[in-house]
Length: 174
Image 1 (cartoon, one colour):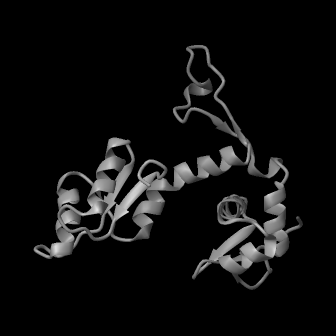
Image 2 (cartoon, rainbow, N blue to C red; image 1 turned 135 degrees about the vertical axis):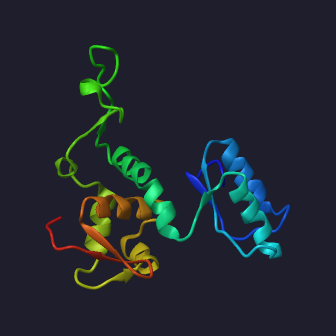
């Protein structure tokens, strides 16, 4: 889990728990480690408070994690959608114009929709939300490709996520 994730969030952990082992493995791999602070002296907060003391990032709510990971998620979605151009070497061997980001992103609207994205859009109701399980059944996609297509469509402004892992299509032509 630590190896395939961008970040590990430990909500509660007693001293010596498996969650702390996962957090240690994540840190060893260079992944972000977040910990939810707990009451001092509480047995199930001893591990998370120790992680914070040792340099883990504070997680007060989901926005702490999603805000930090947003650039990585957006870049991954663009790479999956085939819209990222590798950096072109500039005169000094770096990127053109001295860009520190290491690449240029093409406009999102330039690329056509993938077959999975089309299937998701066709199954999504407009003006009302549908649960992710029902959406998966309606479009026939397994969870991984379904979530990837939803993320890409949300970045493109074609889908909106509603509370309770419900999704709705936005009014635009497929």
